[in-house]
Amino acid sequence: MLSRRGFLRFSLGVGAGLVAAPALARVALPPATGERVLSFYNTHTGEHTRATYWADGEYVASELATLDQLLRDFRSGDVAVMDPRLFDILYDLQQLTAASGAFDVISGYRSPATNAQLRRHSDGVAQNSLHTRGQAIDIRLAGVELRDLHRAALSLRAGGVGYYAGSGFIHVDTGRVRAW
Image (cartoon, rainbow, N blue to C red; front, side):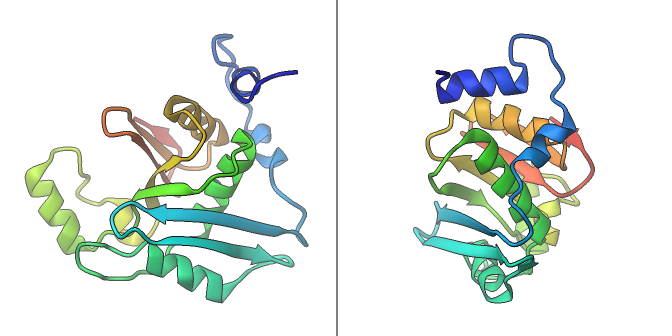
């Protein structure tokens, strides 16, 4: 019987030099009539939420609005509509890692003003960050080692993936496939 870590190493080809197949990512998706549920903990506001953001073959508008509120710019209070495909990526990550815990949110939406302020103090903030478009999130996942979460996100080939080991999070977005 493989442990969760063993499963991830086998599935993602860690140590074997394998390139993860994009098909692996789609194995996790439920049937169109199923439900997709995600749990979040916002590390800055202390808010928790559990949302069934997809049910019976479609996104659930009221649940997406709840997630938009939780992922707001905690500095300014600005709320934006988050790209629902971001939640699909997170759902796939949760399924791929067999995790049942909540995502810790380090950063969701960032207003352009907040992004500009952060850029003035750090060279690690992109000028045209997808956070300002509701297309990016910085996260950890309870019960999953950060390096394993990073490898799983890379295997999805669903958008951008950044690894910030020193800060204890990964970045995922719905932009073009790339990694840093």
